Length: 227
Image (cartoon, rainbow, N blue to C red; front, side):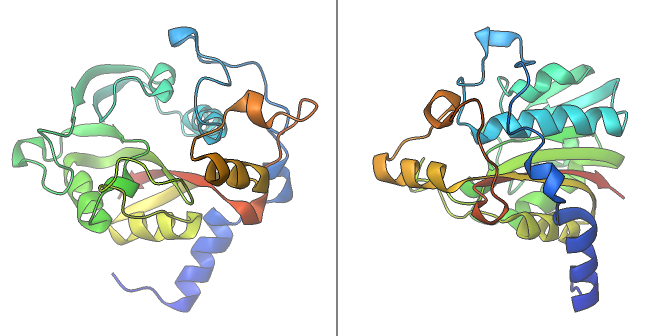
């Protein structure tokens, strides 16, 4: 799919560009809503905390509930706690490869969630097309991906995505972009590359606040709908 400059600008301004208020709303994190596994704000790499809060907000905004068939690639994603579903299909790799999903999955899923995966796909566009094939019309897909990160799972770590790149990727595969979110700050970037590990809330907390700096994006996430 080709895009005009006008289409790119419209997508950026309507879905990707965030108001200043977005970057302030979780500077002071609310109580952690995740109940499973004794989860707390330091349980994961810090960007996932903003991702979870956005996910909860978006699920409510679009009234996404009572999902019949859910596809997932990781059973312990904390986001799963906040959606109701009757049936789930775990698409672990191996044996499943998102670059080539079997035809018996076509038009099966109402919701497809696969976090922290796109950076490990050598052909992300082909994989998103395959995912689109499995999602029903008006079904949803959600994922998060690093923009900048330390190398991990090498040699199967290929890329990172800025919010605009993530939007274009899904738009190219025929999805309608509903929401894009992002988080990052310079302190986090310095720490992960200085010490080659990820950092959580306790490592970044400064007097109860952790800034989200628009130009220092480290991770982004998307909610999209198949049209």
